[in-house]
Length: 185
Image 1 (cartoon, rainbow, N blue to C red):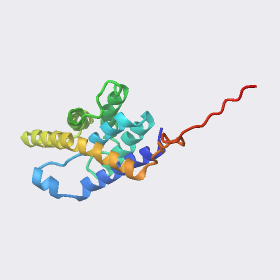
Image 2: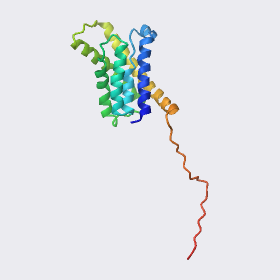
Image 3: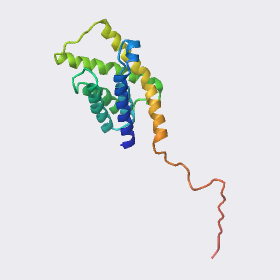
C-alpha cells in the first residue's frame, strides 16, 4: 500500500465533499447535487489497496453526511458496496480505458444514491419522492459518469507531479566500449 496515494485520495475526497457543499452553481444549473465520491471510489478500488477503499468509504461517507442533511454514517455502506466489488474484480476490468471508467462511474453514481435512499426509507425516514427525484438521480448518474474519467486523469497528473518517480537510468552507457584483454598463462 502506498501511503502517498492513500493521502492523495483522501485529500481529493475532502475537497470533493467541501466543493459539493459550498458550490451552489452546479446545483442551481442542473437542478440536482453532483456527487463525486462514487467516481473517486471507482478510482480507489481500481488503483489502491483494500485499506484505502475502506478508509475512503468510512471517511468520505462521514464527511459527506456531516455537510448534508443525511443522518451521520448513512453514506458509508453505499460507498463500500460500490467500491468492494470493483476492488475484488479489478484484475478483469480494463482500468486504463476511458469508456470503462465512464461505465463504472455511471454505475457507481447510480447505485450509491439509490442505496442511500433505500436505507433512509427502510429506516423510517419520510422522503419526498416524485418525478424530480428521478431527474436528480439521472443528473447524478450522468455527472458522475462524465467526472470519473477526468478524475482518473487528474489523479494521474497529481501522482506524476507530486509522487516519487524512480530513475530508469542505468550506469551502463550503450556507446561505451569494453576492452577485454585475454592473457594466456
